[in-house]
Image 1 (cartoon, rainbow, N blue to C red):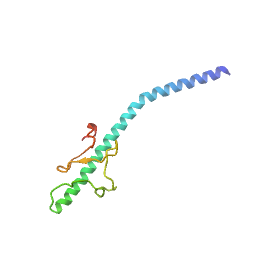
Image 2: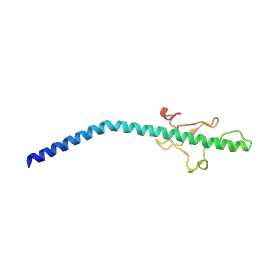
Image 3: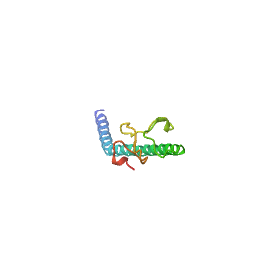
Image 4: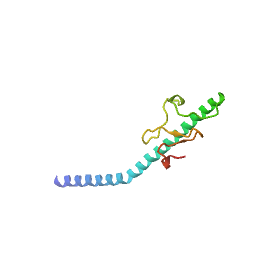
Amino acid sequence: MKKIKSIIAFKVTIFCLLFCLLSAVAMPKYLDLNKQNAANQCKINQILVETALAVAFGENLEKGIVCFPDKLSEDMFADGKIPVCPIDGTPIQFDPETGKAFCPHHHESHQR
């Protein structure tokens, strides 16, 4: 009986070691995917802002005003929320002269 318990303990130990090794190999790849997802979401949010700005520019043009809006408003977006950078929820910024959106943190991976 003692021999069976020691064999089971040995198998459990080997399993735990293999699991830890696999976790150590897979975790950095998973963390890198999270960073890539955040960067991609930030880029998508920048496109949403630029699209809303283009629509607002068109509406202003109909009124004879040739300019982008000075600031974003929630009614410019279908879900009623101003898009944000997923890192900390800071709203996407834009240049009111050009209508070009950018990440508020200027992360290189978030630039298009």
